[in-house]
Length: 93
Image 1 (cartoon, rainbow, N blue to C red):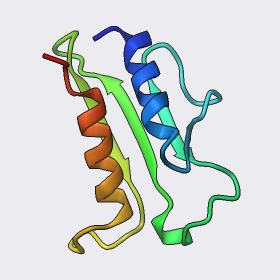
Image 2 (image 1 turned 60 degrees about the vertical axis):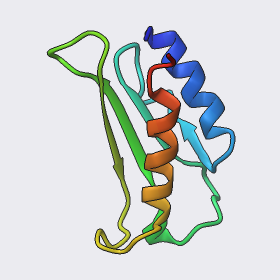
Image 3 (image 1 turned 180 degrees about the horizontal axis):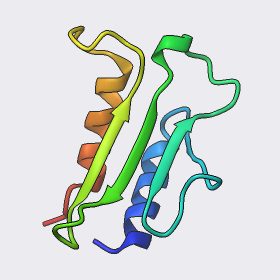
Image 4 (image 1 turned 135 degrees about the vertical axis):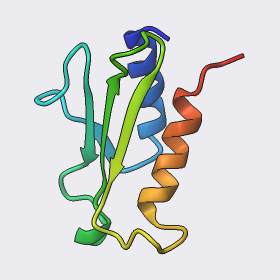
């Protein structure tokens, strides 16, 4: 998937959330998304997403979704957003 296509699909996905792509920390090879300023979620549920190309293959990406929510708890906001991004950037067949 081309970088522009990935960015567009991710932007469309993020429209459904309180996350934005932060252009200050994103570039042509790296996407950094974070909660919007003033997002209405608890401080420990704030999420950041980092997407970068896999250095071994041109068509794979490394996706890192983080928050301060407990890792072992099911159904966290972090888990829900990670699943949403996973579906969004999966190759279309």
